[in-house]
Image 1: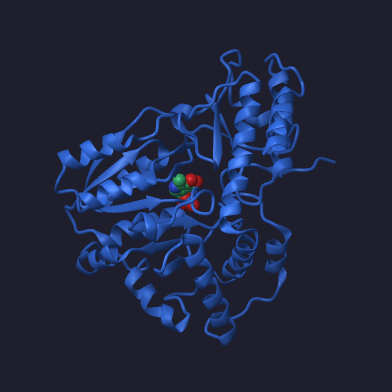
Image 2: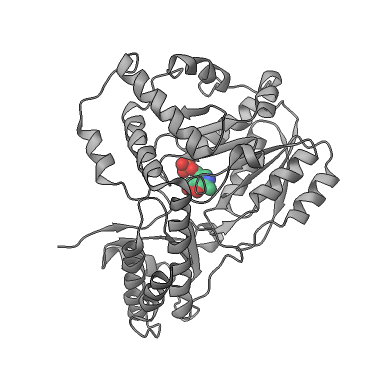
Length: 379
Ligand SMILES: Cc1ncc(COP(=O)(O)O)c(C=O)c1O
């Protein structure tokens, strides 16, 4: 018998109070029952986003909402600035170029964040830029970007701020209205503790104004059409009904804990993870780490870095992820957000200690776990 544990940055673990809902008979979406459900979910999403704007639900994963943001806001040939601190920043560039936009990309070394000064210079060099597209948390490197400063700089330059908060929304504070975030995107399989298949997007008044003049092709992802259905508590197409039922419970749980307590929990789990891996003599990749995920460099003495997550999963039942592309085999990523608590961190670090030892890395058993426990006792 082997128990399994999911410590990946999406999908994240699903609480039983949510997964048990999926066993119920499906309801139809053009009914009062769905309308009541949707009304409650819409209010919960405004709380999560800290906004007065409508938060639209799309039946797709996060990338679909990123695609929708581009195809519903810009005009062919528009210039946008993309901040590439990793794989998902690069995705913004690819989406923008797929729609015929001119994407000017700022790429930094893996593990580096983007400094406000770099954004300021980029905006100054490109005064015709219509928007800055970026991640609040770059999942591929575990880096946090300075969202508040980026939004402020973009606004001062009369450009929109388009924020992929897929592993940030519900993880750390991102008050949409207060910080003037023009487009805020997240997805179901992250802090919302749901299976994949649902994404959320909200637009500021400035972004909605640009939507009116946008001329890029789209059909399914028509944000104005989605917005029009909302007063009837309906979606334009068949919604992901079961996921929306799950979302109601997820939002109820977040409200019950309190959004800012959720952020504090994530901060503590991230701190304990960072202290644990550092105590084991390992190095963290991100200079400015996100509280969603910790990317850790595989020690040089381990020649095949892909073995580390493999042993953790196959031998000890703990699924984490490695690095992507040029970081493959070079890092591991331990996630600590969503339905995640202190003992998930302890489990992850325990499996890491065992796997490191198995690969010949010198481990003093309990050193990482001890550092995490110490962090919790002080936290
Ligand atoms: C920051 C970020 N952006 C975008 C995506 C893509 O989302 P999806 O895989 O749900 O399409 C992910 C997925 O991990 C992500 O972490």
